[in-house]
Length: 403
Ligand SMILES: Cc1ncc(COP(=O)(O)O)c(C=O)c1O
Image (cartoon, rainbow, N blue to C red; front, side):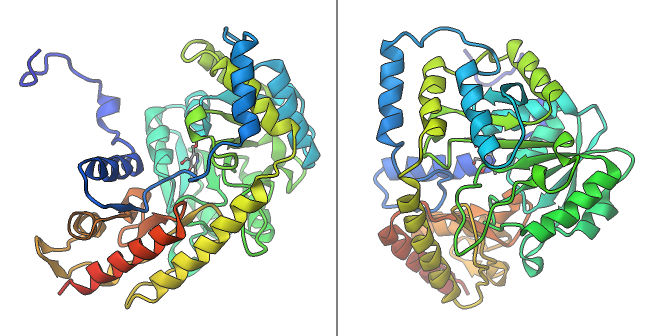
């Protein structure tokens, strides 16, 4: 087959969307590594721990016990029950009908955009944002509207900014706390103020709580849907096992929200993906029905690495780095180095900076422009202390070599 001509035309929509840049950087760093280069990668969007043994064992048992066939499209009843019980233990008042399971939280969010957004609807997305939010809104025919929560406001938007961005076309707000890429965690008070605006204007909130269990230094993850009476009718909480249980490859995500929305998502899945892998569902029940003894150790490692990464980055001249309170990312400001000159010419932007650091100093970071925050970069500290030390030293060396 010739690669020269392309008789098959792709549609307009897919041509407006870029591939996920975070996956691209991780893939490039992995390729260079496989070619024998000693790369330190801060690109990973996943814990560097193994899935807990009891969940791995449960999956193996599930296969042997015959959990290998189609299940209910939105999730097998026992799993939906386990998730509903877990949420009710946190103060929710939900039944299994309020839950739908998808192939990872990314797919949950995709499905939600598909069932909620009409062409021309506006979806408010605070920046810096997780890379997939704008593309998912666009793929549903919606229009992303960005509000800037800059470094000076702790990478968080205010209720006033939200109120000012709402128009008659606003359908939804996507909120992510703890945040990827910044690690920012909204306080209860900040979210209460946002909740009041949401209730006044009756917009939908997609509350992405995928990092809800990963908080440090006394920070608390807040259940947005529970903040005010009536808010649960407007909120869909998105969650999953990828980050909290080191299960990124299993593809298990879910939503908790109004029944007509979970039903619509199940209907969409019935015509697209069908159920997620049957034995992944059986094994996931294990994650909800039992305590998670691995979590404290995981949090201890992440907390130590968080402090180490912040300390090392702050020691670099001209770099500003807020202390993140959750997830496993830091989001330093490297803009003091934009405009300097490297061996390949001027460092025009954060993409050029990341490319320079990877090519000349063997360290992979993800450019901030991928997250709507040019001049910054995202570093994942889901890697060993030794890698963090080596990688930050390479960044410091690379930056100081710029003229
Ligand atoms: C903010 C955020 N939401 C959702 C996801 C999707 O996670 P998954 O599809 O693995 O459940 C990610 C993964 O990187 C994320 O960072």
